[in-house]
Length: 337
Image (cartoon, rainbow, N blue to C red; front, side):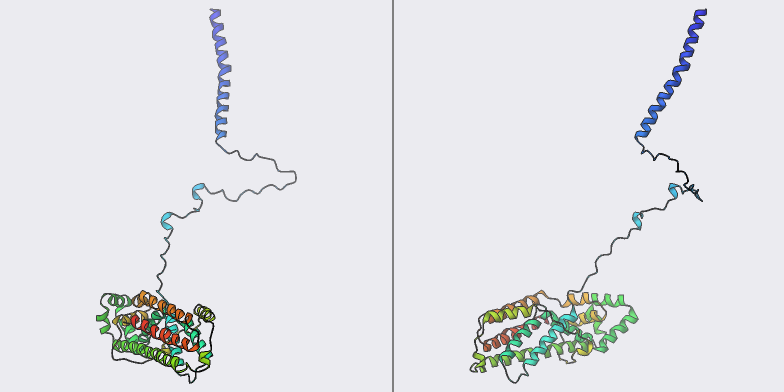
């Protein structure tokens, strides 16, 4: 009996000793596992002697859920706006260039005498002003001339005031001929556009005719038989054709008011209406033609081929007459059909 009591006492003692040890070991393993997945914080150190005690915060730190968001929600991020559509070309700039070329043609017809300097100056000035966009410049000049007709522009503005701009734009798109037939002075604006183009073509044709006649009439003059280096002439012509041209923008007062009996194609009047309403994207689409640029590119090629085969100033007059003005005039005629 005493032996049994002794065994029970020893077992109880063992349990009382080993169970706490096992509990401590188990808690140590758990703490090691937790420390393996956590970044240890900085060790607490006592402030040096004499250092001021840190002030206690006046308010508790906000909870994590109360902190402000650092990123916007997806629905709050606006999609980027599509790029605005631009006109096919600058109508004012191309019209000014065409007008300057017509002005040069008009100037050449007023010369009383021809000199080598005058011929070379005409070659370089036409090279600077002529470009692939001359046909577009002619069309732009016609549109701007119609747009500058005050009664036409005023009637369009009245329609906008009565119907609203969106309604006017919609009618221009769906049935432009019927709508413009109701706009006062639209027919007058169309005949003005036709008249200024006819006047421009007359000046170009006149320059072509007079320079062509001069190419034959001055052949026996000493200055016209002075041989020139074709390569130097070509180099100067190419440099002039790529040089910048600074022209003043055309205003309504620069538009001529010449009228013709037959108006231009109706697309020019529609383009003028779009321009008055501030939509040059639609306006340039109506008058832009790839064939016009191709035509003027051929003109430039023909001028240079002519100069490459020429040695004398009277031959340069022929190049000006046949290509710089006659062929350019043909390109303009095709552009306004």
